[in-house]
Image (tube, rainbow, N blue to C red; front, side, top):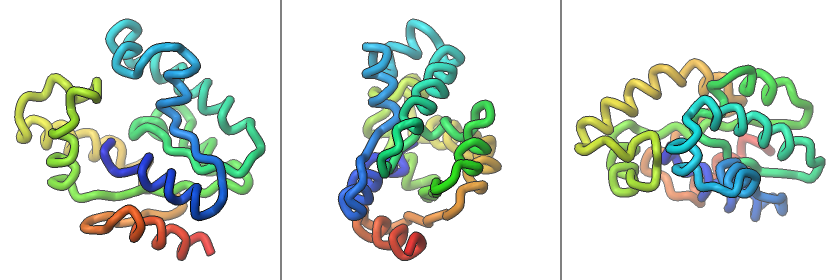
Length: 165
């Protein structure tokens, strides 16, 4: 969450002349509800099940694709293992400093259902620290880990392209 997956994904797709898809947007289109509405009315478990289904649909398309998943996507079910086992699929973890993530996300927390209730940067930082601790096992399974601290979107894309080619 807040690592720049969508911004980096869009620019990477342009650089590669691939299609870009944001998984959260695909879920919203599929269900006709925003992510916040899905969480509020159906809950996280329902969301995660729908996320896995929409992910399968998106990946069944054989076009060249850059996909920005949600931060929790690789941590549920067998998603990370399934992505890692797919032919011609490369997974990338955009790793960011916790303090940078906290500042970035605090400014936009009302648009993010998992953190909208957190009233201070300290509470948000604690929440992010806990989630990163829980999710790092999955994130570290990515084919490439890009340290994004102090880098622009263009710099991150260039680093990814260097790893890919």
